[in-house]
Length: 101
Image (cartoon, rainbow, N blue to C red; front, side, top):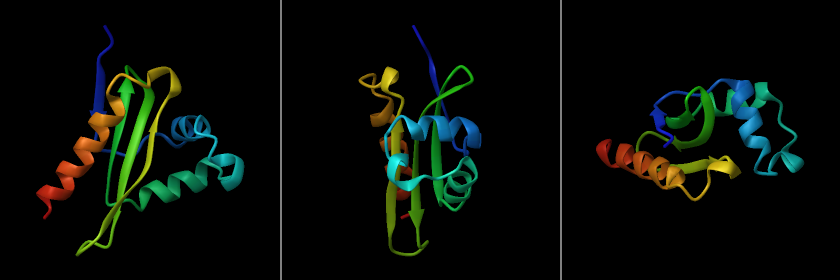
């Protein structure tokens, strides 16, 4: 059985770009790995999910730090979908927001 680990850090830009490509979103955005790295570096909080060293999921919160936070970029690799990884990421993001009040 695979063990998924979760890290509270931004992933490697090249790994994230590959994961982002699986969504089809970049057909419109046409973001480079550097663009994506800049975007996620400006997040208030993020969670990366790994199967060994392979990035298989990601989610982040962008916040004004006072009143509002929005969850963006909930992504799970298609070959890992249906295993509860997205649910775990979302739960961790919401918990962090609640902890910060």
